[in-house]
Length: 331
Image (cartoon, rainbow, N blue to C red; front, side, top):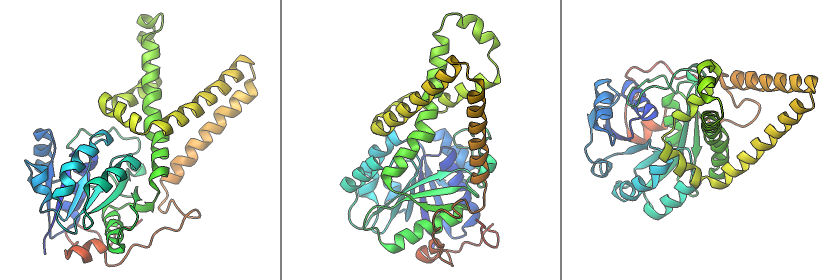
């Protein structure tokens, strides 16, 4: 039996998922769609997809598994026409960052025998500091050794959950189950807040007296921080922050309090406390990098879900996962 996978959105994540599936699964057809046809052509040329789809709604009718890899601001519109078009038993995995709103939209658009899984991929530590690839450029190893955060709607059948875990295994990621409320709060901290701080720094600097001279001496630290904001489309970021409003306000409040504390240390000329603050922050950073690079990053904290063997992806869809696959993906 040949399984059909549809990937909607051929950004770096979507194209790389397609590449991993194409390399590691034998009896599979990977179909790709992007609003920009040029990205679909790039992905097909790279072997990330087998064929391009002109109409995602039509393509969804025959797909066994659908990956929705679009910004959070676009998820609702896609769910509105893709959800009703899905065939009975099909599963949609949504890789966007925000999940509370998505679960509400799914409840409105999905019939009882169509399934939704929130699946937020985190790149492996080896790619953490690499330049983000251009959309459509695929790398099958992008997620290898990373994390796939799974948000499971209530009353999801066990075999569908097993399928999601099997897909995580196939991508080389550690599957971790997280509540929608929790993941939205996390995304405010690690996606929304960095973008806002980057953009605020750029805006404040460019609007300050002397910017004409300041920009001449701005170097790598300034470039590194202000670049983060450019990774987000302004419209998509604005809508995403509105969707996740309460979590963003909470994170902004915490950050403002932290900045006030640092300001007080500088104003009081408390050099020892300030140096200790810097050392502590650096220690946290190194600890995070080390933990992110661990083979089993959940060790000692949570019980990691046991991955079925043989893979549920293979068992449920009746496919062979032998092509280009190593003996077993190690976590």
